[in-house]
Image: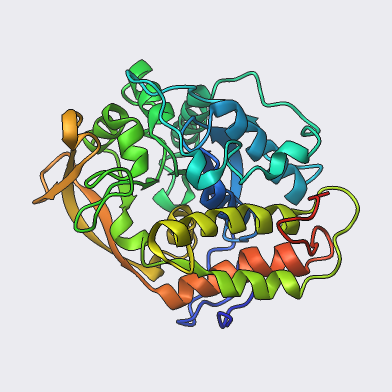
Length: 368
């Protein structure tokens, strides 16, 4: 399976409709609680010529924030050893609640336990807190507007948030205009017409910090929400993962991206199969990244969204008619075939075939 524009398009490569892409990639900040599907999303982002990752920020969610920060450092260094984007540590707990994590889904370290046997990252996280990094990139875009006239929207950076929205809410708490410089904020979160994945009504990110989610949904910012309704249709089949891993060359000495991803995804898929019989893994967070790279693969609807915070409704998201001043776009469906092709071209093939960091292993092998 392969997209016709395969596999890492340059700025002027025509897409499936024959249109040429803008030669300048979109700058993005990734805000992540880096568990398994976040890791896949990070690899996809860093292997896509249409975007450039300006910074990666961590937030507690799938795992404690120190584990998520370490995962971001390890993965970004493996992909770009000498020019990896800066990584900033973010909020260690939600705005007003104890932290809930998901070790049964992602392992205690967020990556199925694989990082326990890996050496420490080469570089530390920045001293600047995540919410300040997020706000600084936004302010820089607004400053460019003042210096050079209003930037076209497509020249402004984008923010992709795949974890609880604590860092974003903290930025807004300190300055209500802190995120105004982003062309769009793409958020993986929420569930509307499908069951939740943390209790019957809530999606995990919104459940962990419902107050932060409520702040963002009411902010009036240009938000695209990627909920479970769409992400539960985008699945990495276990057979596809195994086929790529088995076709990989032997692992190189040292840390192997392919081996890390294989073991992490094997853990993640095993949980999905145990829980529901699904022979694969939901690609929640990679769909949010794919929607930035290729907006045409998703269909959206303009609505207003409320997030409930109390009792049994904690984290529940409710869509209603679009309201002036707080309308967002909600992804209602995705082109599953094109998404899976993007996943194969930008994650599986580089991780298992590329000379830089490919490596065959099984879940029993040492990852180095």
